[in-house]
Amino acid sequence: LIPCHRVLASGGKLGGYTAPSGTDLKQRLLDMEQTMRSARAS
Image (cartoon, rainbow, N blue to C red):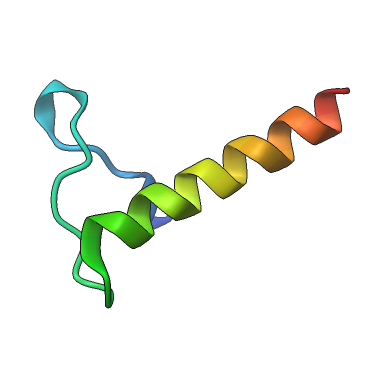
């Protein structure tokens, strides 16, 4: 299963997200995950 905030539209764009705050929240979730991955890799 893939969490819905990780699904990108064709062309690599964020696309829609129906949660409150829409694509702003989607981007924040992706940024938070990237920060966590970077911290674990250090």
